[in-house]
Length: 267
Image 1 (cartoon, rainbow, N blue to C red):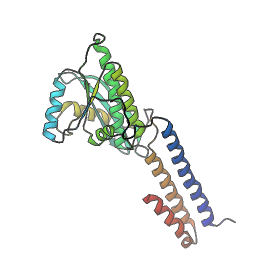
Image 2: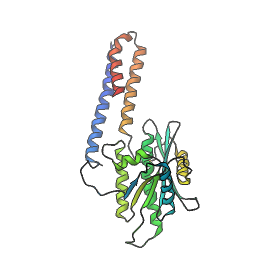
Image 3: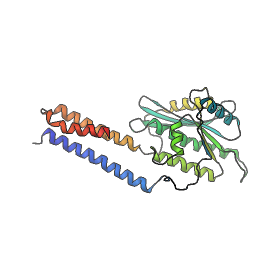
Image 4: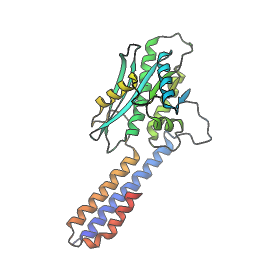
């Protein structure tokens, strides 16, 4: 007859091995696909500029001026409600009406973070820029004013500007690849920070559409974040331990397993 401690150890061993195998396989896949450029290597710039103005009032003025200037302007934002996430991108005409928009249900916060959703919003904003630029029918070879994607997410802009060893690598690399492809098609891109909650119509509209997009379904091609997968496995280990702890008549024998669970949760 298998003791509660033996059975629990067996389950924990399986789950822990699963975590190690998943981490190793993800690292191997990442090393041969969508590898970011290491510090010191040379890569074609994806964006003409990533403007993160530290002064809030100046940033607000620059965002307003950018929208009045020539060139396409697209706003991106993300939102989270009731453990689900959504992302959106939108372009407005001078009168404040929506020209074109995109709403994406990101999925559960169990697998995704608001940070990842904000990155996805920027990714889909790039596709929106391309669609709008295609309609402008400019003559081949004509020099275009860079299109601007405005977002109120500073950390995401910083991650894109310095992408080496940042969380959300697959999304960041997809952003950089899409931006470079657009540049080769004659549509240069720039990123700009706009302060949130500053009565900017474009930013407010993107935020509203992101809230409308929130849902449990995954409507994008990206794989779950590694950090969220590891967190899920840790929670499973802790749940298994707690179930065995409550079911065991000799709970005192499970202290070693408790220490393992706590160590995993801190790692």
